[in-house]
Image (cartoon, rainbow, N blue to C red; front, side):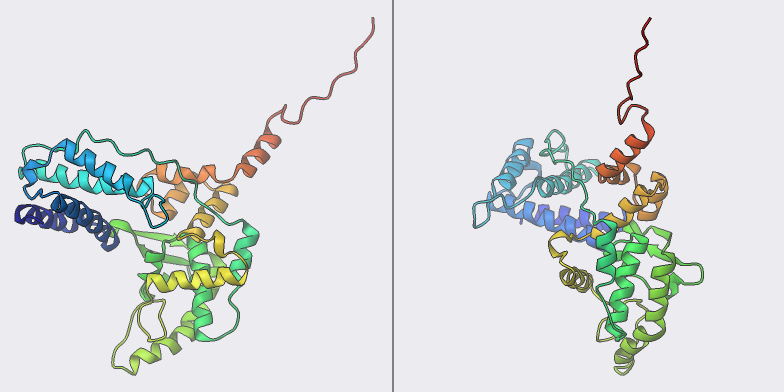
Length: 322
């Protein structure tokens, strides 16, 4: 990587962290995408940022599209290529706006078309089976049950669940204080079932898990602890979800946000206002939440059949003879 390009990337990363206040995971994603971009430029001997024109950015997008895995399939989905281009555009826009470079070479470069994704959601019977997959009163069983109930009951992200501290839980009011993307705080309800599971875990299971940490001369304020008594990781959380899914035959239907998707879908199916669901999920714009309205064609059919006067046809009136 050229010294000048490296300096600009460092300036940009500092700006993302300080001025924009991006969350840790978002910062990591930008760094990952821009490392790939920098490696591409270095491989072509481009070390001077001012030498990057729109043709170079176009070629980079084509390069990403041409990448293949060992089986000859595209290595990157259109959504991943589009996300990488967002990072590149943001970097060049920053450089031009701050006066580090005279122009933005990425301004006219179009992103690949990304098919509109419809979140995969479990139906209510599948969720009931998943939530009932964890049995027993052992500390880790209590934790896993509380985690699953919390994810579905509140619709929060895995990263938000990992970040919960004991002080963020209001069991009496059945509320959580959640720190979301961009360090934006919001209050979300969790419902009686999730609150009950959390109360049981906090009272019993968590205290036993916490003992392991206390013995080592420390403590953790985290709600969800691992066997060492420290804050559980995102990877461990997903392992808990996957194991529960395997027990009830749902492994293939689980995605990273399946319980969050299911929470939003089921609320809308039962008549929740879209803006309320937006607030619950912590979406910055309602357009992000609107994708959930496309999930349930069965509900659309049922509402149409119940509301449209000609949905089921019209009974023919007997003709009268003169």
